[in-house]
Each structure stands twice: as C-alpha cells, then as structure tokens.
Image 1: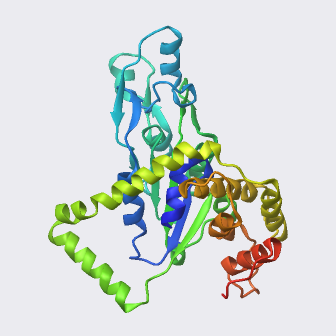
Image 2 (image 1 turned 180 degrees about the vertical axis):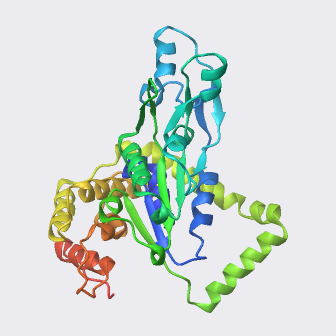
Image 3 (image 1 turned 45 degrees about the vertical axis):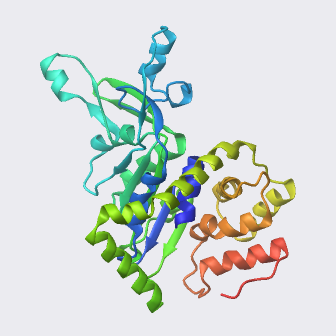
Length: 332
C-alpha cells in the first residue's frame, strides 16, 4: 500500500490507487499521512485552481490569459492539498457550479470552483469508494485520466486543470466496485489484519504513545520523514531520465496478453510504475526486479474473475510473470 501511494506521488499519471481491506487496518491513516511527506509546491497567489506559475499545462484559462496579456504573476508556496470527498457529495460540489451569491448580488455569471479545483496538484481521497454513486466515480476517474475538468452548465463554460492523485479505500465486504470502474484505477493494494502478536503489540504501543503525546511522537519520526521526503523529491527529478529496455517492454505486454487483461491500461500502468520504482531506488534503467515488485499491484484487479477458479489473483500474476521472465516462482 505504501509503495503504491509513493509511486503515484512520483508519477501521478499512473492513475491512482485503490486500497481495499479489513476494517481498522490503517488504510485512511496511511493515506492522510501521505500529504505530510510531500514538499511544498509553487502556486499562483490567490488562484482557486492551484495553477503553476510557469508551467502552462498546469494553469487555468484565467491565468493563461493573464500571461498572454503580459501581467506579472505573483507566486506563493503552498502545502500539497489533501481533499476528502464525502459520500454524500453532489456533482455540483465535486465539479463546481454557478456562484449564486454573485449572480444575485451583481447579476453576473461566475464560476464557483468545486472539490476537483481544490484537489488540483494535490491528493483526492475517497473513503468507502465502493459506496459512492457510480456516476460520481466515473466523473472523478475521467478527470484523473485527462487531467482536466470541464463544466458546461447554466450558461457557464469553463475548463481548469485537475491533476491529482486519486486514492480510494474501502472494505470489500460492503460491496465491490464495478469491473469497468475498478480497471480505471492504476494500482490496487489489498490489506489484511496483522496476525503476528508481536506486530499487533507494536502497533498498539505506537498508538498509545501517539495518544499520550502527539507532538513528541511526531518529533521522534521527523528525521525518517525528512529522509523519505528527500527520496521522493529525488525520484521525481530522476523520473524523466529513466528508461525501460525494449525486451522488458515486450515481456510486460506478453504477461498482460497471457493474463487476458482487457485493453492496454495494464501495459501502460505497469510501464509507468516500473519507471517510478526505478526512480525511487535511484536507478536510471528498469530491471526485472523492479517489474516484479509492482506487477501484482498493477494487474491483479484487471483479471477477469472466474467463480469456479480458486487460485488467488495475485498468485496467478506471479505465476505468469515467472513463466514469461524465466525466474523461479515464489510459493503461494
């Protein structure tokens, strides 16, 4: 789970993470802690869309027009935004709508940004995503894939960047996502309750220490957090220079074909994730070991489910991977 989250921060184009598992396993805690790992970003001051001061691809239409007119943009530093999407959210609240207050008081049509605008260049988190209305999930996944949110309503036509890391979590006992929505998430991590008594005691003790003195607990982890933050920043800078040998690209596609994965999303995401993990480990070229670490995260949720098949999806991915790449198979 932590690896999938970090890889999506390094390369948001991987397409987000879906974390499914037992109740009380720290899914929400881990996702919310992710924002603290990220360095501050440069934004255009007072811009509701967190536009980038210099990168035109990350600027709203309004900021672009200011640049074209020669206006000087004031920039500011801002902590990466973590936006929680409540289950009861409406499409207007998510995408944005007409500003009623301005319409009534000034008689003008103005746009009131929604949660997608707030989440631009940040993280959008949906707890219990499997209980969210399918239509809303579709809207979110479309924006996450294209990087833009377009609103056409009440005489308003506006388009703004919506580049965010989409993270969903949920408990499969409460219902599964439809396969076509499941496939749209870049990576899938499954979490199970810790069984070893020693690990359970360690978790309980850490939680107790935090409850007694949160500030002291956080200070004790400051150095390790700073190291991890530096590692992610270095990986983001190296990512564009990482390469994948042609032979490994062919092997990745062969695994996807033999697993009968629909479409090409599996190939694309696996290639992106392999580059991201190579960058995280400060390697300029992807190796078989890198692909092995992320293949299950990228493909297990894309397999067609056969109700008569008892084999675990993750083990099935490992088995085909071992055959194609010619390496020993780990026992299930």
